[in-house]
Length: 192
Image 1 (tube, rainbow, N blue to C red):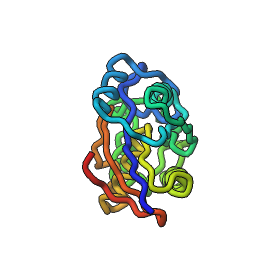
Image 2 (cartoon, helix red, strand yellow):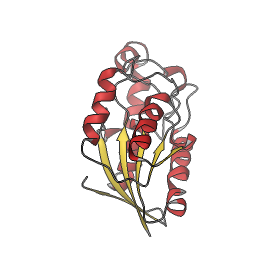
Image 3 (spheres, helix red, strand yellow):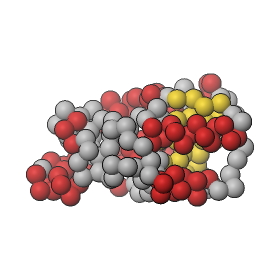
């Protein structure tokens, strides 16, 4: 059994870029537009699955209602918690923690930011949440509204990249990607 997942990253947020993590800020008008543009002309999902954070869930609720389908908020699809780096930009960290930032970008599994969720725990959480979907929604097509970190993890796995390279995967605000997920957890990327 195969499940089709359309992964949509949230758009620009009110508090700007950087390590958003658990910060629950809303989308800007531009952020809403980025997501709407990505989904232009697309419909037909069996359900909309979303991170519970506002930057995903607010938009997901509207799409579910417009498409007459169920909205499922999955805590496992939250962004990684960045600990002491929450709300800080990479440029700011370059001035205060350049070496640590470099270590994180080089291999996020080997370096955890201070007080942050370890990448292994983040990956386990996300993969458990996504892995439950084929049993609950066999052979269906779902829209998954989530975060850059979640999408990088899933896309890196689908592309067969080494785990340490997941931060090299580009996922723009409002980015849309399609994956196939088998009941045994195998991911593959396909065109949208």
